[in-house]
Length: 412
Image (cartoon, rainbow, N blue to C red; front, top):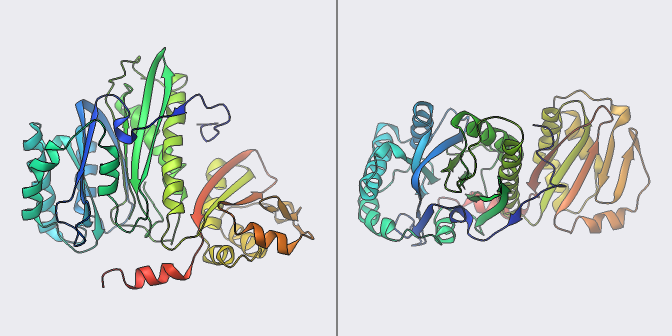
């Protein structure tokens, strides 16, 4: 949808509350003993009424039980009342036992809420190959449900993280049909980040009324422009998942057709996803800065996004940023291998305000000043292709020594 990425004419404002900012949602987060650290590890988000549900999932052939469960559910019924997430065990590559564990979780939470189990969407994050300790989970369900509140978003956001250093949360409000409408979200992710969705998770709540088919399309496009445009280490998780509910509690006019209100709602949804995606990239394991890549002058938006993502994911570019080395050749090389045609003699590369290449020719620039710029956060890389008017963005982070240390010791 043209113009969705642009925020120049945004008519929304940020509000507190995360996933409980929209009307009709409650959330909770508790420590159930699933993490050895004793930190919060079980989260629940509930809509007061049945909501239209959409999801985007990892394309990995090795998937967690929750991924297949949610994907299959939403293919048959685009509604849900609850989103449940455990942290500590990925429940991926756990075979039939893992599948049964996941079903048991949905049944137990559904029973505690008084709703069918197929109205409970599940998500897991943690170490691959480890099952969820159902005895601890079962014991914690009553406490989890009792802690549901309309200001529980932040504790839920804490309960879904693993190696994250900070929680990720945002909520925006706009007006549709002279009534306020809100979208909120929380997310987790720090390492194993190179989503092909369609270990990051995101949960979105919305109080607008949207038709199921349109809501799924909006969520997919928002994912393509946000979570699918971030990269930390080039590894796609077994558990990547974006779940989004729209419960209609704002009592705004129902959105059933593209254009107009649908476009405005999608723009706000995309902005929520972009903010969460950037927070994940900035919190990359061992990262010292966020890298934002802007590609303009492409023939198609998808091609611009592909080049931007290739540059943001280049280990050489990421290493150069960490080393404060304004080596534009690495940027040019990454753009050239992205699998997109563009005339090399039109290539333009800019690092912050420093123009490094124009018309395919290198330019003289102040290397010391450019190196100093790389100490800032974020680092902005702009690439022009000189072909068309399409643009795309991607986000990543630098590659530090600490990334290796964190992942070398992940299970030990």
